[in-house]
Amino acid sequence: MTVKDYGSSSQSTQPTNVQVIAPATLNAGYTFDAVYEGNTFTVTVPDGGVVKGQRFIVPFIPTAEATIMEASLLPLNSPNTRGNGMGEDSIPTGVWRDSLCDCCKFGPCHPSFLTALCCRPIIIAQLLTRMKMTWLAQRTRFRNSNSNLSDSRTEIDQRWRSTFRNIILVLVFYSVLMMVVPVPLLDPANPNAYDELSDAEKKTYFINSSIHSALSALFGFYFFYLMVQLRATLRHVYSIPEENCLCLYCGSNPRDGICGSGDGNRLCSAGVPVGVEDVCCVMFCPLCTTSQMARHTVDYEYRSAACCNSVGVTKYMDDEAYEGIENGVGEGSVLVV
Image 1 (cartoon, rainbow, N blue to C red):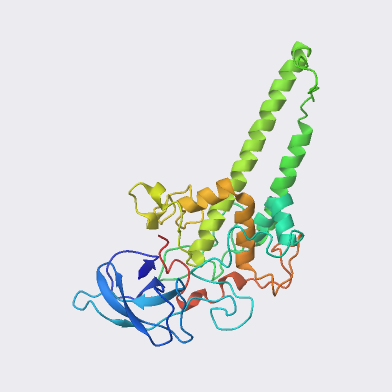
Image 2: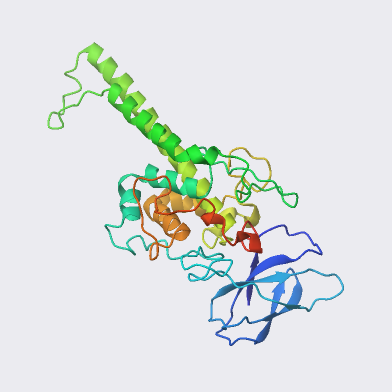
């Protein structure tokens, strides 16, 4: 029996949502024991039953006196139900909607895939807007006395509405600079092409090439950083555990991530734990990672994608990304370990 949680490891009388992975295919009402932080408690299979490996969430209250307790279930959102039980195009919690390698799930000509393939900054801007994040990957703040984490459900900060525009401006500014600073083209068939340049041409070539390299590195790092913060935010909001690359933590606590776990580290502007898995996915497969985030936040089986609007989908409501999260599932309620 496997249990995962997402939150503080300290003892508390308040319920902690822990993620349970079913040990076998079980019918509704079946009970089995699970162990969390040394406490054994009884889990009751919810209505509809579960299949082996299925994830669902149970509330757990750590107690010093009793080690066995029965918990009622809060099932994970399925692909066909929202957190409030309404709507077809839900956003699942506790697990990704589909695999990292399902880029062509809706075909190679689907707008979301083509945008991720041909103009990734556009779809990154759209995803940031869906999640109400700024062009610097900051989450808009909220007013909630029960938490100190950044949460976009209660909106008092409108900066996210300018995210798409700002990133387009960054893209245009970068493109213009690259055109304004020309680099002379050398004949690839002539191995002595550089040596044949005059001293003034060599100096211009060196300076302009350096500027191009610096701009390209800065531009690439900027979008790499945005993608890492964005993926970490999605995992935090939808309580998706980090399952790979855990060996790279080298003894440190995976629940804290490599930064951003409320320690005031400004390098992680989203204010959520950034995992090694987030960095590795963005570094080694940015196309698949971006496409997966787009598919997770919108079910394209029910919604029409759009290439050039601010959210990448038609008829999108401002709070869609956070529907159902207030029901206790999501916003860091299940530990990513």
